[in-house]
Image (cartoon, rainbow, N blue to C red; front, side, top):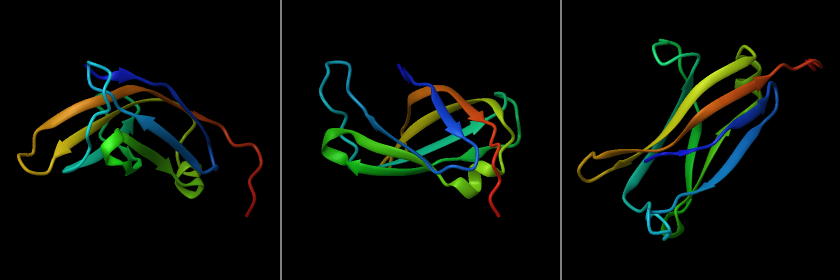
Length: 113
C-alpha cells in the first residue's frame, strides 16, 4: 500500500523533497533496476498533468527525490492537486504505486523578471 505524503510548493520557487521508501517489514526498498515516475493533476480525470523530476539518490537504501524548478512551478495555477509516485521494474515493467497525496501550490506574490 502506498504511503501518504503532503507536499507544499511555493509558486516560482525551486522545490525538492527526498523520500525514503521501506518495505512492509521496515527494511529499505531496493530501487536498483527501477525507474521512478511522478505526476500531479487537478483531479483524477484531468488531462493536464505536471511531472516531477524523479532521481534515485541511493538505490540500496530506497532514497529518491522529487523536484520541480522555479520556472516550472511559476507556470502552475495555485491550488490543490493530486499526485502519486510509481516505481517501475525495468526488467518486467511491473509497476507499484509507492507514494500518493496532495500537492498544494502556494501563490507567488513577488514576480522578479
